[in-house]
Image 1 (cartoon, rainbow, N blue to C red):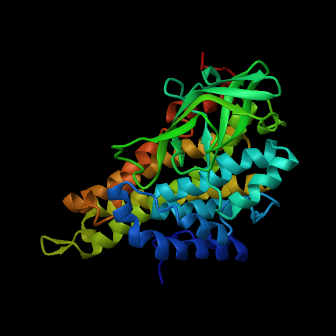
Image 2: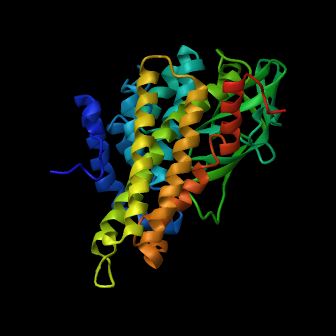
Length: 387
């Protein structure tokens, strides 16, 4: 019996029983709750918010955090969850990672005990949806230049500014907003119903359509003193939070790549041209083999980073290596897979063009390829090329 075309090196053997159990449960959820509706949600530019309590019931929201209703799973299990979610659609992986890594993590890591008790259990259950406000209309790759500012007014804080390209912003019940203060950059917990806070969804997207992307406006938003995250000042807070989300992306995009590869492989075996399946042609086989190579290497890379994270020795620049490589290769796999399907590859009858469009966004969010290249360049040369 030959090697498994979808797990050529038997990577499944490297997982624990618990990791496989979590992976299989998420894969089943995607098969039953995501795939039947994803074409319609993508076409109509909708995200089914009703799945949040279901994700919470499965223990997937903030699953890599300890306590406060969170599952306390290891990093590899979280990574596998991101992979299976994105095998369905990047919008669903984004929903899970924004909730757990970008919204819950900073409260868990930098919040007070009162803040953790108030927010984390409800976010873990899916009762409360969160978002992360860092990027601004004129400030993307250099968040230290953000214009959103918070000033003290008596015992209160008053925030003003605009955040852009915020996943879940229009459906969020609470936003973690980063702002300049006299003390440096600080993080604030901003409930949706706070006066002066509003969200406007960004329309006419051709990527991540099954995901809510929004602009957040803070117009003299007044918050009590206990709204600030007390345990962090400066850019360390948002950058540490971004590292958590980037780790999930390293895994997630391999799910999108797997779906594209599997779709192309199946199609090539049934599409007949010149009297035989196109899988029998050398050029098609070369394309499929190249996809298999990068899918296998990318999954091994993600697994190694996961084991390092679980051992407490994973560095941010190592996450950058994974993000840079895996997103780039996933996008190449999607594009190559599309060519095997020919004209059929551009329709929503097949998942490839949807994944390909989504990956165009993943390529640039949570740090562009250029930014991760410079992070790695600085790491290996000891010299910064950012300024």
